[in-house]
Length: 48
Image 1 (cartoon, rainbow, N blue to C red):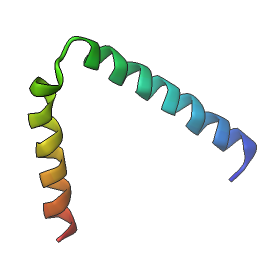
Image 2 (cartoon, rainbow, N blue to C red):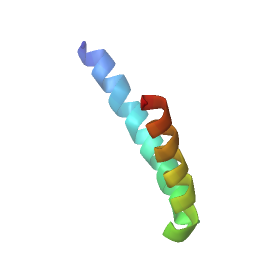
Image 3 (cartoon, rainbow, N blue to C red):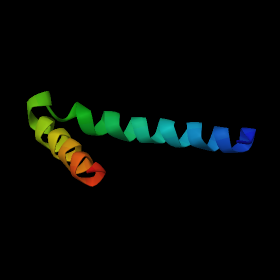
């Protein structure tokens, strides 16, 4: 990968993590566990 591509990926990761942090601040772990478990289940189904 070129250095430019790596920089773009790193910038995208920073934006993504900032968005995730904003969403997590308003929720308790008990609230978003259902979302995470649902995503894990969908990943399991898509892999099989």
